[in-house]
Image (tube, rainbow, N blue to C red):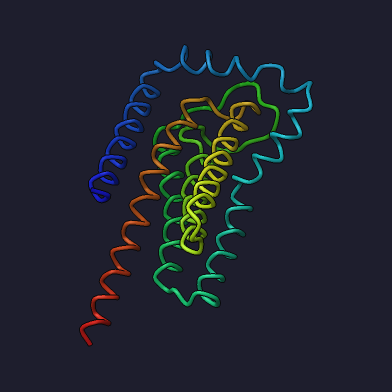
Length: 213
């Protein structure tokens, strides 16, 4: 049942991403993006500006790059889990490569008026996509160390809320359209689940081989 649920989630996320990509290429997301972006108007003159600037940093390449190194070192020296090290490295680096490839392929310009400087094309949101991949992996390996059900739910909720805030910060700061963020979430979640599913398969195979020797 769990395997089928994962497959269903991956397929739904991919469909959502493809739909957004097609709509963006046709220029049909203007009304959708404008309606959601209106919610965040006026951020520049409020205390929300420094808050969103701080939150958006948590999805930056520098933070996720450093965070990935820390996670890999933890999995190496503390857990001695070499498959996990490989999956985290491939997952984050591969996600970043896919993001860059898609941006250069679709070449959507960023919103005209932004509150912070941003480079490159807009679709999909790298902060949302790679942030989703990275924090899903961090949450997964933290949850492996927790036995309390209530604490597990608290960790899941905390990381979900953090990823949502990172996406919101990109819209509030005017560097991404809402469709960029939602598409990034969808593709990042699909890719992250695929990576962790491969990890679980490798661990099960490793366990089976060890049991037979």
